[in-house]
Figure (cartoon, rainbow, N blue to C red):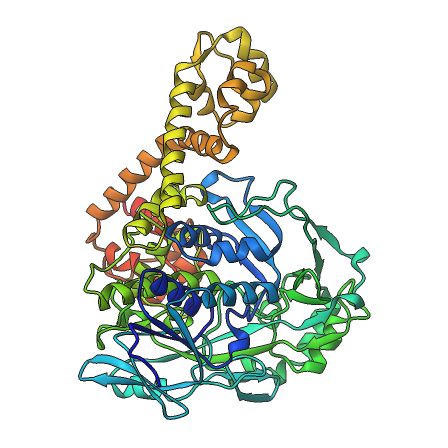
Amino acid sequence: MFQEYDVIVVGAGHAGCEAAAAAATMGSSVLLITMNMHTIAQMSCNPAMGGVAKGQIVREIDALGGQSGIVSDKTMIQFRMLNLSKGPAMWSPRCQSDRMMFANEWRSILENNPNVDFWQDTVKEILLDGEQVTGVRTSLGIEIKSKSVVLTNGTFLNGLIHIGEKNFGGGRTGEKAATGITEQLKSLGFEAGRMKTGTPPRVDGRSLDYSKMEEQPGDENPAKFSYTNTTKLSKQRSCWITYTNNEVHEILRTGFEKSPMFSGRIKGLGPRYCPSVEDKINRFADKDRHQIFVEPEGWDTVEVYVNGFSTSLPEDVQYAALRKIPGFENVKMFRPGYAIEYDYFPPTQLKSTLETHRIKNLFFAGQINGTTGYEEAACQGLMAGINAHQNVHNLAPFVLKRSEAYIGVLIDDLINKGTEEPYRMFTSRAEYRTLLRQDNADIRLTEKGFEIGLADKTRLDNVRQKVQQVEEIISELTSHKLQPEEINPKLAELGSAPIREKTSVTQLLKRPQVSINEITGFSPVIHALLEKYGEDTIKQAEIHVKYDSYIEKEKLLVEKMNRLEDLSIVDNFNYDVVTSLSFEGREKLKRTKPSTIGQASRISGVSPSDISVLMLFIGR
């Protein structure tokens, strides 16, 4: 009935879709097994892609030849570039997505790849020949042979859903849990644990009073994720912001005794940076309100996602509390929020390719590795799919360094530090974040994607043209000098010191107050020089000029950190006196008590900036 496949991908969430698409595009025969063909690429939680650090990951996936950026561009209903008030290293693209269009677009991409086959079933067991995977066995008792297997099970492994005092098996609301795989892997010597995540209620947008909320429109000139020729948005839907209040908090507190989180029924740890609303009002009792983002789920639906109100309290408590939020007085609820516990496997059991140490050609990707977020899952799926293909065709492993991509940072963190709580990517986790900007992911990664057969020649040609044009722009701006009488009136207007002699445009651009837009706005010559170049290419050149010295300093800092890898930390070091440490970093250092800086740097939650602070404090 079935051929022997090069790669079997188990699970069709964000990780599974990227894994299947990557391996198939590179030439492997792929079977994608999912419990439900109608929930491929389902956005189980918020209908959005990108965000701080996550947007950089989506751009890196796209630069390598993955599909998440393209799907996001084709299905977004709003786009915003976050952190524009900060430097370009912090700029992060984020889009609001049409949930149904997103899933349909992903399914279309996979169905149009001739190397991808599908099978709707549940995988109960992996097949082995000694310490090498040889396929899977499904709930129907069917054995399907393959040279490699990628497990992307999401929250389905022994998933348990909690709403108040009720709990029932499930990997997502309305879908059953997956059993068998955890038990088998544990019998083979794998270590497993439990984690928890949650989701908020969904409500009827027709029942909301938006006049009581703050509108949050998209960018006036929206960008996009993909470096390909996807179309930019011409119209957008707004999101809205409202707030909880003390009355909301008091109602929520009435349900605490029935809360599965406070009663101890939930054993797994949840994501620190996306706590439930009951956790927020419990941990931050001094705050009299919390922000709620009201997010539409698509172009043609009234369903609304209540971002910031994740909860597992009883449904009647959820409903009563919602009705006290401004704009929600007459709210109608489609379904309550819930928490879900699921099995994961500590990622220290993986190689840098995401292949397991114990079983050859068995790969883990996504929430099975203890991560949270669509973007984190998608990039792991991409890398696992790539390396499954590389393995079965006897090709070199494909690994990204921390200095090459946020994807490299994420995987390096997971396999070396592990994680005891759902891992989420932040810019602070990357010591090379000035290099790893969202605008230059194609320059960093597309050639690598082309070399392994994932990114096509058109992408590579576009990148090479971009690099050449950036160099041309920098050369022209360096050679063109402005007279003091030309530029000083503009500098005075911008609050920048005047010049006393002819100065190149590149020197002027190094000033924080001066941008290329200001210079082209008053200088017809510069405007004419740059007219033939695209907006993105000009911005790339400007960022390169402004950040040149910072990049060099960053490299020196990393070299210094490497030299001090084994620097000792005295016993019973008092981390409380180091006030510049992040709260999480101090908490983790006090708990783990590392004996060296090297050990401290590998603790999940201790950021590179925490290590820098620590090294400065001990006089190094």
